[in-house]
Image (cartoon, rainbow, N blue to C red):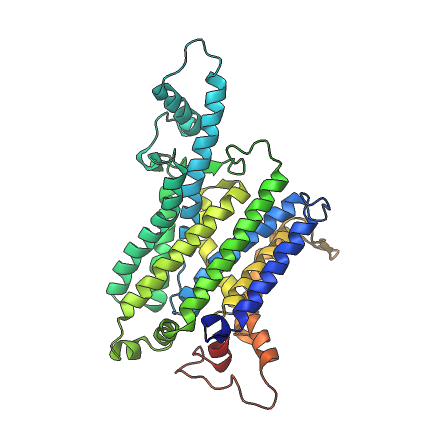
Length: 410
C-alpha cells in the first residue's frame, strides 16, 4: 500500500472500523431489524451523539490543531439546524394546509395557500406573512445549500475581520462568544423571522414519510449521521496529515515563527475556521430533525463552552479524542439527566443527579485539566507507546502543547 494519509495516521482506519462495527451492531439491535433491543428513543440519542461527535471533530481541528479556541462553533451548528428546519416546517405545513383545503368548493389560489401556510407558521408570533429569510424555504435543494452557505459565510466574514486584525488567544475566544450571544439574542426576537423564542418545532415529522414509523426514520438518520461523521473524520485526518497539518500545528505552537517563515498565517486560520464552521452546520442539520425542535437557546454561548469541555476531556489534538469526549459526555449526560441514574439518599440530603450533573461535568473538566491534560485520548498514547523508549516525552515544538511523537504518528 502506498504512503497515504490513512497509512500515516494509524488511528483513522481503526476509527472507521469501530464506527462501522457500531453501525452494524446498532442496526441489528434496532426495532426495524426485529430485535428491538435498542429502543427508538435511544436510537435517536445515538444518532444525535454522532452529530455531536462530528461538531467536536470540527472544534478539535480549530482548537486542538490550529490553536483557535472558538466559543462560537455551536452557533454554526444551530444555524445549520435552522436552515433545514425551515424547509421541514414549511413543507409539513404545506401538506397540512393542502389537505384541509382539498374539500373547498372553490380551489384556492397559490397565493391563498402560501398565505395560509404563513398564518399557520407565524401565527404564534402575531404575523401572517413570510419574512425574507424564508424565501427559499419551499425548495429542499436550496435550503440544503444554505446549510453549507450560511454557517460558512458567517465564519468567513467573522474570521476575516478577526484574523486580519490579528486577534488571538483569549481575545478571540471572547469575540466568538460575543458573536454567539448577539446571534442568540437576535433570534429570540419575534421579528427575527424564525419565530423568536418558540423556535422551529415538529422537525421529526419528515414530509412525505408520514406512513413510516419513527423507528425506521430514526435508523435512517442514524446511518446518515454515521456517514457524515466518517466523511468528516476522513476529511479532517487528510487536512492534518500533510504539510497543511504541519503548518497549522506550527501556528498553534508559535504563530509568530510561522509568520516569520513566510506562511500566510491569517489565510490558514481563515480556511480552518470557515471549513469547521461548515462542518458544524452540517452536523446541526442532521441533529435537529432527530431532536425535533430548535430554538435560540440552542445557540447560547454555554453550548459552545460545553463543546470545548468535550474536546478537552477527550483530548485535544487527537481527532479520536474529540469523538471520545463528545460521545462520553453526551451519553453520560443522557443517563444522569434522563432519570436513569439512581438518586443517593444521604439522610440529611438527597442527591438528585438531574440537579448535580453540570457540577459533576465542571469538576470532571477541572480534574482532567490538572491531572490528565492529554484527556481520555492520552490513555491510548500511553498504551501504544513502546516500552523502554522515550517516545512522546519530548515536545517537537516550543511548549507543552506542541506536536509530540504520538501525535505525529497518530
